[in-house]
Image (tube, rainbow, N blue to C red; front, top):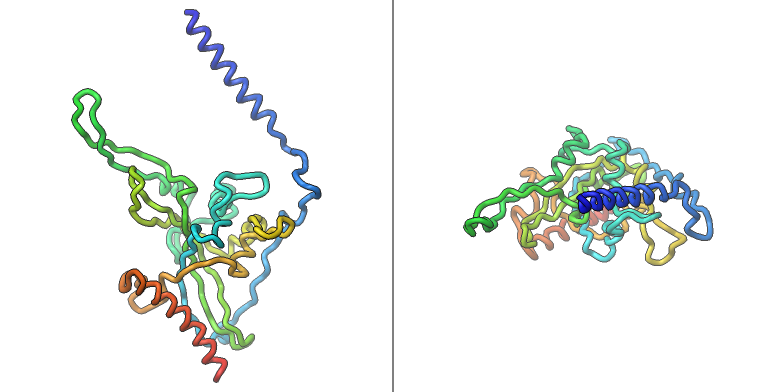
Length: 280
């Protein structure tokens, strides 16, 4: 009886401790710095120049991958956990999806919207593993359910249009969509493949991106936003698909080094088109 009473008292004390901690989290904490940051929350994206169909003399649709493992792209992945003035790219996306300020789509044509329930269901995975039965010692199959974590997102896919605007006489690019990609592994940590989660329509998400700062390795007083990074194209990436009659990706007809050379060839062809148009 005494043990039961002690256990109840311990549980009660733990509950009080958790309550006290949650109550001690300040709504208006002290300023963490030498000045008040008032500009980041009021930032607006730079409006894109209006483009008429009659002024586009050439265009090509490109899909590319931004890999977070590359040094220049690590600002997308970190911080691993939310801190006071910074969040990772995926944490920003998931928070905005919960608030309803960003809409997720099933596919890069943006035809079907996804609900939060559908997104959560897509983040759950089911694996079948082999475990030893504790009674018989005989191996048997067991179904294990788990939730995909944000730190498993190591890439994002980008869909964009490159075009030559004769009105302004420039080659320009507009990002249309972004897709977070999960790295799939088995229970032993072996790589199994990449899985796209959902697509975000980039023009509608720019307001959220413009208000979210990321780390500047050179100057803490001059923080960039995720919108700045995309707008100024301050990221490293590689092309994995160009619009074509077969609607196929590069890795469906090229592998290894040949695939990378094909991606570089597509990039060079775009610059060659701009050069040729200037020659006309």
